[in-house]
Amino acid sequence: MTNYKPPYPYKSFSLHNYRKIPQIEKLSAEQLEAIEVVGRVLPFKTNTYVINELIQWDRLPEDPIFVLNFPQKDMLVPAHYERIQQLLKRNAPKSEIQQAANEIRLKLNPHPAGQLELNVPKIQGEPLHGLQHKYQQTVLFFPSHGQTCHAYCTFCFRWPQFVGMDELKFAAREGSLLVAYLKAHREVTDVLFTGGDPLIMRTKFLAAYIDAILEADLPHVQNIRIGSKALAYWPYRFLSDPDADDLLRLFERVVQKGKHLALMAHFSHPVELETPAVQEAIRRIRATGAEIRTQSPILNNINADASVWAQMWRKQVNLGMIPYYMFVVRDTGAQHYFGITLENAWRIFREAYQKTSGLARTVRGPSMSATPGKVQILGVSEIHDEKVFVLRFLQGRNPDWVHRPFFARYNPDAIWLDDLEPAFGESEFFFETEMRHQFQKKAPHIELN
Ligand SMILES: *Cc1c(COP(=O)(O)O)cnc(C)c1O
Ligand code: SF4
Image (tube, rainbow, N blue to C red):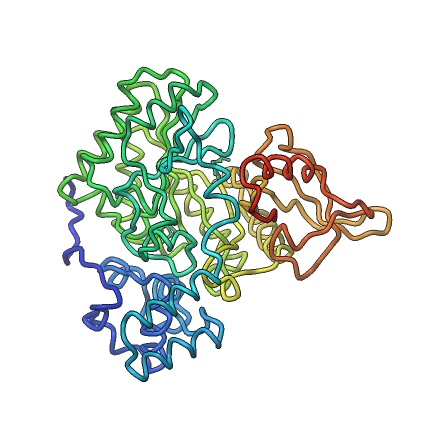
């Protein structure tokens, strides 16, 4: 244990108790109403660390962490906002509000197209619902106890998992199914624990899964990754929680077994890197032999600014972390609020990248995690008098697609891959025929985008 005990207990706040947040009086009547209305549709959860150490309450309403955790009026389009607002005003029954919220959620397109059916692997013909295997080397694992987080990001597309729309929930019952799958798939080098946030789990649950992999003698599984926002939302997970030391010992066991342990840490803003608690947590994690790689989406109203990214990447390197991905968002509840154009994302990436030394240039992006793969926007260029986007796959459903430059007609309004048309009068992108074949085989009723 360390001396970094928080001077307050861990306590989370959501729709039913947010009025007990001590700083709540700093919110205007409109902001309080937004919590009531938008919080019925998008998930809302914050905690004592976020409100005491991250949010700068004198910077409301623009404070980035406030926007990251607290529902804002403009996160719903006016028609949706008014619908819930009216129901609340006339004290509609709970079930009616719930019904309306569910309808709005479904309209917000909660699941990235095809993810449910296209990427769920099978073993002996049985689908494994807690696993996703999209790219050859890496299996995603969604432990059933890790389907929540220490606080919720207002942009997050994982929200169906938090709001109880059960048919959309990926969850594994058993680590043993994972091990059986890994035994049958020697091409897999990486297992990525994801969620929610797997570090919401008590260490003994996480250890049950990880020790099962370590004990199964799977030499082809070389890297264990844990995707988590606990460093940003509750660094005391690594410092003073009752099982913090057990967690660090688990990391050490992975390393001693000759495996690489990568904590894929989600940081959205440099503010999250400034507290003594997070800096000490980073130091302790690194002392186990684990590496910390960082990633975040680029989000309007939170971090759509080159100096913010440059500052974030420089500070991460300074603290011993490795910048990894900048993502473009789609498929979030509030794309109209958080989304930025592909061109702007690329400009911000490029400008920030120019401001860092080579040590931070391990970062890749901006990248869209789209149905065919992770597509990076390399830039805007002009070829034979035609203005184009230059793109490439960083990951592809077919590995042969990776790192082949391809071109789309320039479109300043495009925010996603499906807004793009091939350049030079071509009728399709090079990967589309094969994509269609894969879809028809596995999920014929899903529209390709
Ligand atoms: C991003 C991602 C991975 C990991 O890709 P890396 O480039 O190896 O980090 C694995 N599976 C899915 C579905 C992903 O989106
Ligand atoms: S911590 Fe991750 S999974 Fe949880 S709400 Fe934020 S982005 Fe979503």
